[in-house]
Image 1 (cartoon, one colour):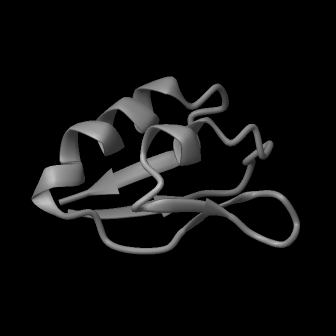
Image 2 (tube, one colour):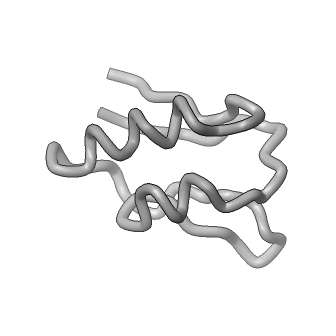
Amino acid sequence: MKVKIIDGCIGCGLCVSICPNVFDLNEEGFSNVIADPSSADENNVKEAVDSCPVQVIVMEG
């Protein structure tokens, strides 16, 4: 599975709090994917996708 952040992130940090192994905030304060999710992170990534208030997290594969 791959994850990406499309344009429109507001930097709320919810994805980072849900799945810090995959997401981080960059120097501008917006979400950034720092690693491809492991199978152990898959449920947390799905939760982050569903929880994103602006729906900019995309799972592929």
